[in-house]
Image 1 (cartoon, rainbow, N blue to C red):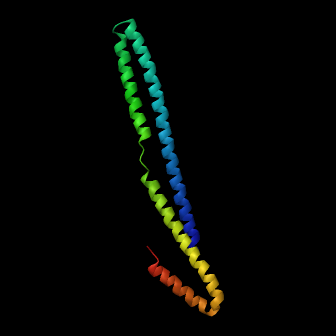
Image 2: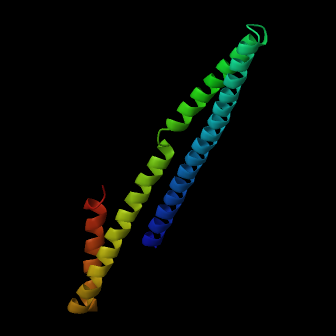
Image 3: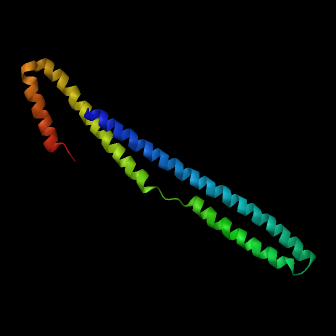
Amino acid sequence: MRTTQLARVAAQAEKLRLQRIAWRLALRAGCAVVAAVFALAALIALHVWVAIVLARNLGPATACAIVLGIDLVFAVVLGVLAMRSPPDPLAEEAKIVRDRALAQIKESVAVAALLGPLARILGKRHVYGMTLAALTFRFLFGRK
């Protein structure tokens, strides 16, 4: 029963970790797409601004320059957010829980694998006492 519970905990932790990683990647991709849109808008505004400046020395050019500056600020901020995304602490904690549960599963399976041949060698009369002693020892000293 304990092994199945550990396997369930490990699976749930891995599911949570993968969900958080997928969410982080989706968020980064969304920011990158929006940054690309603002960068394209900035490039278009730059072209319009240069055309207006060349055509008429001031007036509408100032408005285009302001729009260009705002577009560039958005592009830079969203681009930096897309590139800079630290690992999710909850995903890291879920990974640690998963690793611990898997390690405990390996220990449980190893103990069970050792008790089977030991039972055949010693016979059934000593097995129960040996099993109780092994589990008591593991309970007292095997925990980390």
